[in-house]
View 1 (tube, rainbow, N blue to C red):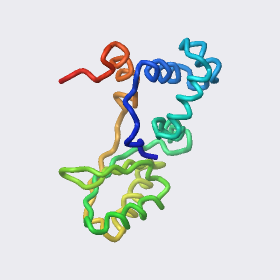
View 2: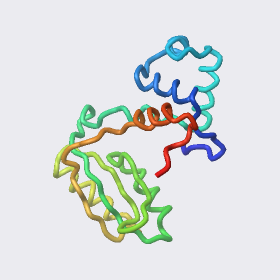
View 3: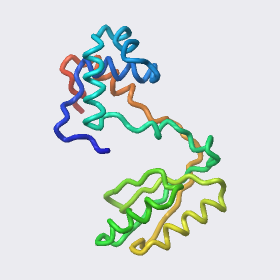
View 4: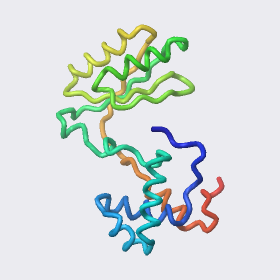
Length: 170
């Protein structure tokens, strides 16, 4: 689900609630209310708004592919025929080992994150992608090690320190 364009930016209540949820993702509404000093109704209303507006990512982001038997992660930069982008996207959705696809500007059209059992499996998956009608070429880069994990805490911390509620100017 994409973020609802009518969604307001995070305010101090959002910062407090989201920070508490990051630290204790299994917290109940009552526990979140107690840890943030907010009323249960406020917490429940914000959680409902987050769900409606697509603020929170799926739980799928927290499942590590290695636990499922896919320890290898790679990124495949892909160039496609633009008029076939919809068909290419639909074909990519049918490959289970593709965990994320982003449209890019610049050197490639798509950045495809794939997971694989081993190098042979990665070769098979890359071959499947190349067989899709509309895919012109690919370039595969093996993820060797994650140096910075996906995170939102630094942004929440910045917003929490900034009294204007706006990201710092560059």
